[in-house]
Length: 233
Image (tube, rainbow, N blue to C red):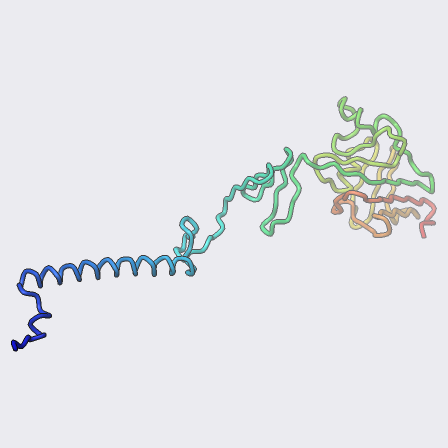
């Protein structure tokens, strides 16, 4: 009986065949590694916190830093440099994003009561009207009254005025602060608080105000009361 060496049967018969086998093994192994790495890459990409392309900020850390000038369009609203343009009206904002007034977009109303010794003046004369202002008359374009049945209801347009500026825009009325005392000029007469028993009180509702500093606000009720007999208490 002839014996067989199992070790010899397991070995390739030629060196060429052996090298070819090793090359096939390396090629297959390399493909497996490539596939494996590709699979790992997909898995890593689906579960990682990578920054999407185009969102890396100026610091390169994957964060979006706001810029000084930013323009967005949404529902017809453009925001640029803190200016909101919507329906043709400009609204500027301050550093904290709070809306501020833009000259030309103001239209507010309030009430003005001017009484001399209890006689309340009515602003019904055409010289106080908007029509007078439009015609280049005495009334101011920014502060005036309308012929709308309310002789005390004022209109303020375009710019916010102090009470002093508003009164100065009306004919035959002027105000000045004389060393801390109210001085009102009305239809040729001057009334100074504290002089000759005269008392002049100026308030927004029940709060005393300085017309040179107080800016009119929508809905204000302004009281100017003059008492020439000193009975203003």
